[in-house]
Image 1 (cartoon, rainbow, N blue to C red):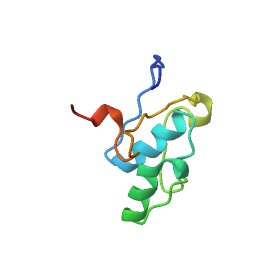
Image 2 (cartoon, rainbow, N blue to C red):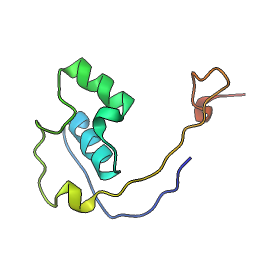
Image 3 (cartoon, rainbow, N blue to C red):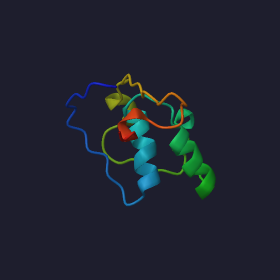
Image 4 (tube, rainbow, N blue to C red):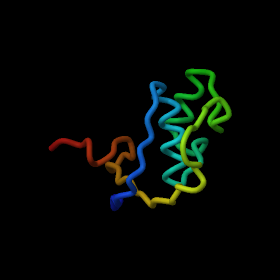
Length: 86
């Protein structure tokens, strides 16, 4: 679980993968440590270090703020509880 907080930051791109990379950095995470980003990078033969992304506007490092999060999983550890139906 996590707590949301307003930051008034907009990250937009026609390239969804690039937006995910920037979003991860804005939330204070290294994209290379986010499983779905790593898989998407491998599928697309793209780096996770933003080296092929052009960011316009303010600098990511000036806006980034680490956000804590926790996903609770079912007993088997295979599915997030938010997706489990009863």
